[in-house]
Length: 309
Ligand code: NDP
Ligand code: OXD
Image (cartoon, rainbow, N blue to C red; front, side, top):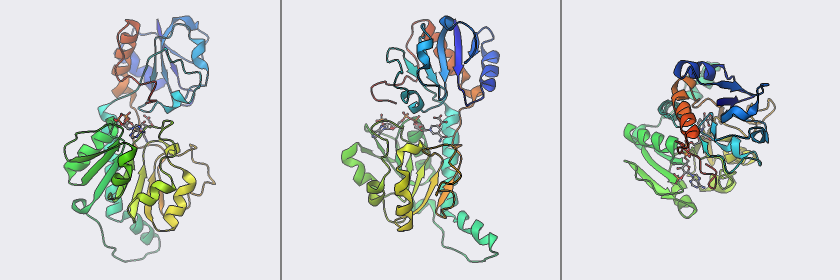
């Protein structure tokens, strides 16, 4: 029995080291190797080549290397009969919260503006915002969105959130489904996206949605690039309806050098670093799911094939 890592664009070494420390007897392989595929019962996957799972006739489970699973569903040959899991990790949430807080506080305290002023040796105080007067809306109240929402509320922000089902999170007003999306969008000063990328959510941040966001609102996309219609963002910023966009994720990554986002004064870019799965922190849950899969037990952090997340 073996676990096979399939991550052509991500270094498998830290994962192998983490598994060796935790479960020295575990047979860990890395695709592409020349060992027989029959022994592989479990694959740990990040942006795999499409169609690859048909090489593994005895697969009992597929696990995403991260929280997101859109990279799995992008494969039309993904086997529905093989259960799937993803990463749910306290450190992933902590990192997402710290990244979110850094962006929001930096914006409220106008740090982007002063960075620009400094380049010009320009001295000019600008009015700043405060936590107590700021409303944050979060699209997606799952593992990450609900955790971030709870922490923002405890920090003193006014917080609301939007999800497919109703939530009961202390200090967070819950809005549900398409019928309540417009009401949700109207009041927050910051709109943060932590939705999964699915057929239902692709392109959800588009010109119609931007129009419903409060004038002067700030948009933050920390989830997946294709959730936003990229061509609709610059017009919403240039018309001054939106004040700024903080983007960590893009339709095409790395963001192409000639992409108009790079040079736009109201767009701040980070290279998909909001929160990265740390193998030393998450290897334990992968090993546990390997053991569960190979002994016929249900997986933890299971992905719902029908919902796509
Ligand atoms: P979850 O699956 O736990 O949560 C998803 C949330 O979105 C749920 O609240 C769900 O509602 C809601 N949702 C899904 N579809 C819809 C819909 N059609 N309408 C309304 N609400 C919807 O995901 P996580 O919180 O773990 O992660 C969110 C995303 O963050 C990941 O999919 C990944 O793409 C991204 N990510 C980005 C990282 C980065 O570094 N930039 C790092 C890690 C993750 P309900 O609860 O009712 O089901
Ligand atoms: C993830 C990511 O989904 O890193 O975990 O984006």
